Image 1 (cartoon, rainbow, N blue to C red):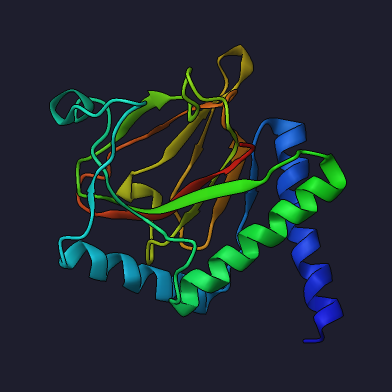
Image 2: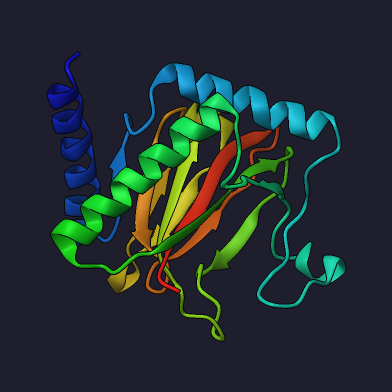
Length: 208
């Protein structure tokens, strides 16, 4: 595929995510990353977990594992911006491209980002929350891409997005699915998958 066609495909994906956010409060797309990259990132995540390199994430600016475990049960590993891993380089290139498109078309002023791998063991969850700290308004948009293989709705583990008028949308963590929403407006919740571990890359587009 020519570079021009690739650029057009990427921009169609970006525009679809933006339109979804504007029209229904969140965007969903299945081709932000190609299948080969999804598989490579899944392999990375599982290798980090097996090596004991993933740790419980904190809530807000303070970390208290016992208290936080009542709210969220995932373990994470941050993706470094100077990574030389091929799949992570593709991921960050796509994130930077999306940021450039958002800044050019929506004047968002994004100038930073942060992303991490997330592993939810069977039965773990993340209760309803916003992605932005009260003391730090830098996170503008949340972006989650799922890495799970052959996920079925019967497996559970859905992301629930809470919209106005008590409307709730349930999205299941199907491999390659990307969800995009505003960090300071959309409350969301991760439900437990009783019998499967749940894999994703989650992060934020920021203005600092």
